[in-house]
Length: 148
Image (cartoon, rainbow, N blue to C red; front, side):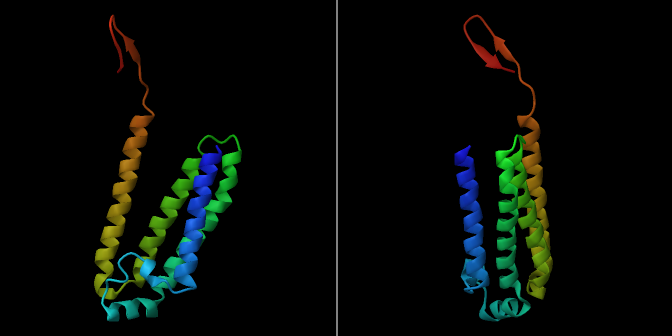
């Protein structure tokens, strides 16, 4: 139990620190791919407010996870899943929303990549979840046993 709380606290702290560094200290190099873009694209993104909004998204994600943290101390069975589900949906939705601040010539491709990634990950998690909740039966044989 305390291990889960510790991991979640570290994730929350990490989001807070990264969001603060990007938003307040202008650590734009922390944003994936920002440092490798041409200078004129970087300037366009800074002018549109994209980096500051990414920092804000990280901070808001941390706050949402912190608000959901007390669920771990209740009898609710799926508290961790709810918290990480919130994190995933909020971050992916936020990144799709922030695509509107992208450089205009890369905006459409960014939307396609973001939405495809969201669908792919949700589909993968759904399939894994479906098969993990399937019943199983233990079959005993004369010299061995196995699950079916």
